[in-house]
Image (cartoon, rainbow, N blue to C red):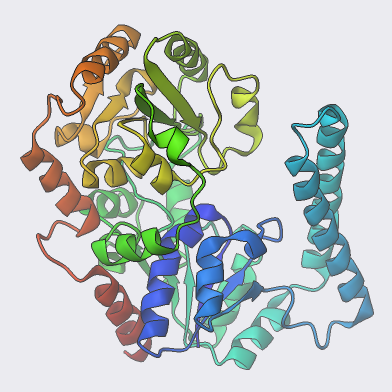
Length: 424
């Protein structure tokens, strides 16, 4: 059995295509969620895998035969608390929103307390070894997760003990050309994160160089392209995507714009971004929606009382289809935008990092609010008039989706790597 471990929206996005491919080719696969807060019951990609017969569950549910009643009680308490957290979050727009926020915080705090207690008492090395033995694990496939998160470390230790391969697969697309894109990142942290895995898979040579600079041997880092953005998966994903927008949303005379935000920890100027929201809200004949990053978390306060519609509930793929123009800072949705032939405006002035797509000249680089306003007004007149070239776009897409090759069967390469590495 090839075990895939997920924890958040982005991980599911990038690992599901690989699981789909391996299941379709009759390889035994299972998906286990290591994050008790993540709602695996309301994820269309996980539902799709379940319909295909893939085992999808929380890792804490299946392997408790010898852990006793106390474990089952504690598990119920942390799962129930996290469930209430989501329920109160769903009601946060009601007239009782203040109470909902307090109750949501209390539920999360309670869930985290019981989860940490259960993790320290029950989720130890014998528990992890039992999982690998029961499943007949042939390989453990994580995303680029730190070993310190959830139960990753004990699973890695158990796999090391019985010589099962430990693989780290992409949970996003690395886009930054400067060395330390996150404000808290250091080379030591990068090394600690990736060095516990036998092999680390990345989409492009840029990320391979970044990880290798931290001291991880370059031969352990493999470039395979992007499973999430290869043609085969993008076509499948659009077939099963739950739709939210309607014909009224689509048939508007205004220029339709979506602002895909980036988390402040990526050296983003949050205050200037908020001012940009205000400026955009005042533009006539232009309709702007804001999609917060899927891992916004505690940064959600930035999007409180927005002067623009918050469309966190709509998928990025559907938003890209709806939009005439996409605004990005450091979001990989620029790949979807460029593949659909939509104008991509890169708001360089909102962060301190540099990106691969600006180096390739594959986007419209915006240096300040005045340039942004002028660009949108220009596109209002002619939606296809952009200052970058198709050949530069195609060069960058080949680099980031196909690992620098003009042609590649990305999903087959991922499958072959996992199978062959396991059997080597």
